[in-house]
Length: 433
Image (cartoon, rainbow, N blue to C red; front, top):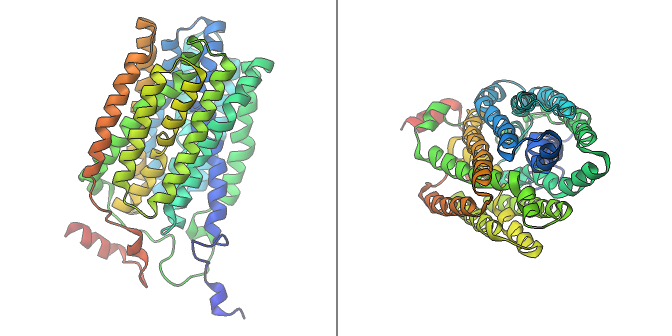
């Protein structure tokens, strides 16, 4: 019979800890999901669709906005489902639906309604393919190294933003945008869905072994209605919404904006790639820092970096200026996907984690859907993005300092480093006291 010590799960700091294998699978899932395959490279299809169908940028931006609003509406519902059922099964099913919906874009016609209807379907199906579900899985596996684990997962979309834009632009140039869409659709269908279904279990389904100390799947924390009554939740939502307003407005219009200023589309795509690469570095760095410092100051820093980069991008007139601006903006952009799950778990626990994530992401998606539409409208009226991006950068800076009003964590990692986790009834009593 095995020695009892051999039955103990390795510590989170060890690469032998099974949660790290799940983290890698979740990162690949995010890389194959709606955040990368649709939202981050949407900008590269604006000019081809303008040329082929005669649509304005505002009209094309409406499709992006409709997809984002669909995600906003569906995220709280998906969050409730993820709190109740096995996440990997829900995610895999939604990944298949998203892949099929995205593939159907290859059959677009000049009827704008077709694009809008497909965008709505992509948004609904994509709700199950972004960080919401994967963060639920990973947050159940980790406590002390939660920030680092989440940073690896959310870096998936950043890696997609780093490598995909030049490859996608090359594919559009050589093969056309229709074949490019079919190639991209294969990722969620053949990679994301099967890997998630077979290799991304929640901790309670991973093993029947019972290590000493708290088990990863222990449920604790506030109910979602209690959380909505706190200042912490609304400050987090404010920061997330502001970051989304700035980030998505720039991301959607970045390639055509730089092209208008004389950069070749290949160079514009490379700037988009720099933005993605910088965001990967920012997410990994921020995830490591989150395990050692409080999130309020980190959130402020991320917002200030994003706001500064957006301001410089709005005024950049050369490749080198745009590249440097994108690098600065990227260090802050995307960090909300580290901050949202980490801070939600630390402030509110795991009991309603996915529901609260879904509600928070609704704020993100509404702001993200509004920003590109607003930028498209301003461009169509004025022919410039500069002034509206300056306004976005000022708003971002103001909200950054509001993050300092966040209180200390309620469920810090040290809370679970006792011999046993508190039972749900005891947690509820603490919340009501």
